[in-house]
Image 1 (tube, rainbow, N blue to C red):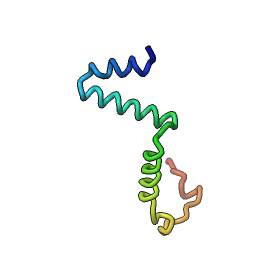
Image 2 (tube, rainbow, N blue to C red):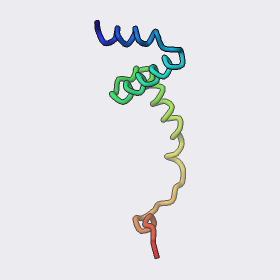
Image 3 (cartoon, helix red, strand yellow):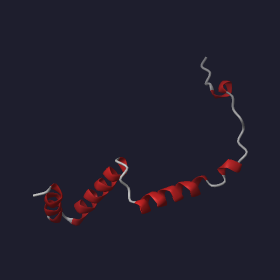
Image 4 (tube, helix red, strand yellow):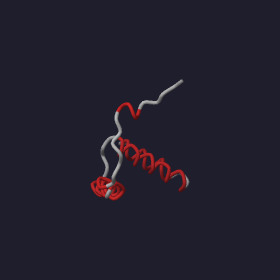
Length: 73
């Protein structure tokens, strides 16, 4: 019996909440391994693009390395 068949058989015996948890884990593994669906990747890219949209036009002060160093007394 193939692993996918074994997982399917065991999954069918789990309550719906546990099945959903398995789904989330599989989605996590897919993302971790770079196996996301094209549609999921497109939505993720779109979401990120919308989140940072317009930030390149913001006037942020230029900080030097000295400005960023924390001074301890």
